Image (cartoon, rainbow, N blue to C red):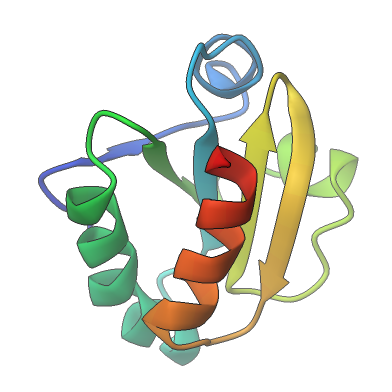
Length: 110
């Protein structure tokens, strides 16, 4: 489920990998049983490839990790949260086209 430039993150590594990251981080909250999550996976991989070196892209399985999704109020998946400087800079919920994600990322990177 994880692409070439996408890493897994879990409750234990979230602080270090996401909140303390020097770069903005896109976190894809997903689950194996979620159809829209599976449909979004190749789009997330494309995003990771496009922004390599400018943006970290990570996935979190909400079934194996419950503390972090609860902390950020994740109620629907797929949910993409973009973190910058340890804070949520933008949030996208549901299956969206790549250009919607690009617009959010470019806002955060600007």
